[in-house]
Every structure is written in structure tokens, then in C-alpha cells.
Length: 534
Image 1 (tube, helix red, strand yellow):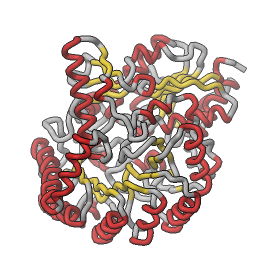
Image 2 (cartoon, helix red, strand yellow):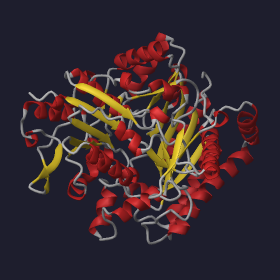
Image 3 (cartoon, helix red, strand yellow):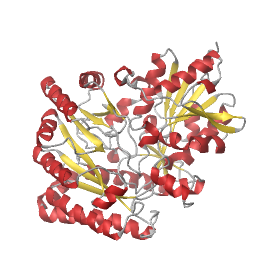
Image 4 (cartoon, one colour):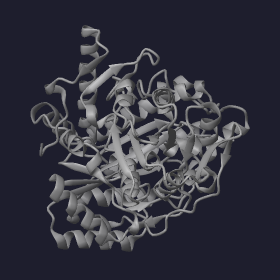
């Protein structure tokens, strides 16, 4: 047995962002922590290089990507921290807009470690595995979908000298071409998956600095209560990554994990990043009642978006009583014909009822919408603006309209590929990356003949302005509360104020970099985001 082959170094890469990007650009690497736990549970030696968590206040310039900032360590710093005895080096690549940057990292890792196995995993990798293997010779293997069992199998095969083609769930290079091994079924016994191992990640730095996509209401840590999504929306790559199997954990085990983090890290808030957290009404009711019984004095939230079918007045009341303080709904469109086209099975009237119930219960709410999807017309836009008006009247707190962007692995992406309008290329990935500069600007790209790119960006901006104009006209006290929260209390206590604080912080960094002309800059103390308990 080769001892080096049993040693694994996992890398959470730094990320590219910009001064004008909306929202926080990083959270703790939950997926990587799960992979580390599975490998350690199998008896393997694991180390982690967290390119962001170990340098949360550091920003740098990248000449190859003009107008963008690197958040975290430089790529050379990442490479310098890799375990020199690791035989397998794994790199996470969740988002397609980061691929060109991750590819650069893989090339630097290969130059430094020419004889090691370089493995990539994540949502982007699952969707683009063949492209990666055939166009990036520095990468040896791509892990598809859920990575725990696959990574354990890969490292075991390496340690025992077996052919990696025997391991299911991989795409690797064979005779110069991409070879896909046997499909690996989804993990069914989700309660038996080892809990994420945060000991290898600077998790307390993430907690101390309020690195959350949700409502900044305390010392927060990410969690999963379920895996997968049973739906097949055309714009989503989830079926490619997870299949349509939805698996949920025993609520008692979820609460036991929450209590562990309270004990270890002083956590007071939990961010559930489930793809579709609330599917079964009975499960969420049981979970809430158990939390109420435990009386943990914590809060929790769903900042990734959820559906509304199970969220009636009874459930929203239970959610609030159990500590839920923030929900993101994902209607995507306010047009019924468009919802049918994109296979989004939601009832808009019932969703509005759910939102009203959530607000009445005291839960902050947000709705995410997408404009410019394939087949969309001006009628769909007008219908969606009508729905935005109804959202404002219903008291929803926040609305964001995003331009449609085709995700590799989604049905819409495959449609555009068949039509010859889109393909996996550096130009395509660079177009995704340019969206980091600012959300609703000239960087927007339209894939719908009814709207130019400029018009699509304008529609998204108008949706934002329209919602808040109506909302503040109907409830002027909300604007006063926002001003008081941001300027007087100086807390990032909502999605909107977190966004403003983040932009302010990044502007400060950009100014520092301009003045100092240094390759990196640290965020000054007065611009760092701190959570309320920190």
C-alpha cells in the first residue's frame, strides 16, 4: 500500500468578486467539510487549505481578470500550503462563473506537484466533467454528484493500486479522452453520512465575521436537513447534480447536530442551505415542535429559497415559535404561462397566502424572480411586475429580480446548445464571470430574442426599484427603520442592510488597492462585518 496515496489535501479556492457585487460572496465550505468527514471516517489522513477562510479580510488584484478582486489568499499562497505528502489533491468548484480561476489554480497545483492526482468536485464539475477532462490536462479526475462515497472509493482505489475506472461516479482521462465510469446511486441512508468536520476549517472566523447569505442575527453556521430536490425546473442544474431524489434527515439528529455546534462554537443561529428544505408538512411540523420543546433559545433561517406548498398559517406560526426568522421564497416568475414553460409547479395565490402568514407570524420574507428566461415574452414581464405589486401589498420584505443565466447541466442550457447558441468555451465562462462586476449593468447577457442584454438589465433594475417604491409608499415606516438600523445601530440586520454594508466594505478595499498599488489589501477594521453577538 502506498502511504502517500492515503493522504488527501482538500482545497476551498479563493473567489473572484467585485466592488459592485450584490451580497456576501462567501460562506463556510459545507460540502468540503462533509467530504473531509467521510474521508476521516474511512481512516484517511485529511488536510484542508481554505483559501478564503484563512484570509477573510484579504482582497487582491488579478491582471487576467480586469475589474475583479480575489477574495482570500492568492493562488500561489494556496499552493504553498498544500500538504507536500498528499497523494490526492481535491479542489472544490461549485460555480461555473469561477471555473477559469479554478482552472488557473489547478495549473499551478500541477506545476508544483507534477506526480499527484488532482481531483475536482462540485456542481460545476458535475455538469462539465467531460469538458474539464478534455480541455484541462492538469485535472486527472472529476467527481460527479454527491462526493462522500465517491471520494472514499477513489482514495481507497489509489491506496490499493486499483484502476480508478472501477470506481463509480467519476469522469477521468483514458487514452486521451474523457471516460465516464459506472453511475453511482444517491446515498439513501442520509442519517448515516458523517456530520461535517469543521475542525479542519477556520470555522470560527466565518462565524465571528457573520459570513452568511441570510439575515445577520447572530453567530451563524451552515447546515443541511435534507438533500436533493424532487422537482425538474428547466433552468436548474439540480437534477444533474443530485437527481430528483429528495432525502430528509431524522429531525432529532438535526437538532442534536445543532446542539453540538452551540456547545463547540457558541452558535446562536443556523442557516439551512437545503435545495428544497420544506417538502413534507409533517416533517417540518415535527422539527419545529421538537425545537420548541428543547427551548434552545436559538434562531434559524432558510436563505437558499424554498417552496410554499407546506407553509400554511399553522406551519408558519410553528416556524416562528421554533426560532425561524427569515424565509426566501422562489416563485421565479409571476406569470402562470411562464411557470408552466419552466416546469415550476407553484400556485402563486397560495404562495402569497403563505407569505402573508409568514409576515403575520413575524418572519422576514424575500422573493427571488428571474427575468429573460427562454420563451419569455413582454406579457410575462408585465405579469411578473403585477405579481411584484402584489408582493409589496402583501408585506413581503425584499424582492430581487435576476437576469436569466443558463447553468451548465440544466435543460435550458442543453436547449441552447442544441440550437447552436451556446457552448462550453472560455468566452462563455468569462461572460458568467463578468456578471460578478455588477448585477444589473451592461455585463448582463440576454439569451432571449425578445430582450436585448441592455433591456434585460434594465428590467431587473426596474423590478427592484418598483418593488421598494411601492413597499415604502405603503409602509413608509420601513424606510425609517432601515435608516435607523444602518446608520444609527450600525448593524447588518437584514438582507438589504447586509448588501449595503458589503458594498461599502468592498469600496473601501478598492480604494486601498488604488492608493497603495499593492497586490493585496486588508479590510480596515471599521469596514469589517460583525454579527450582533460578535
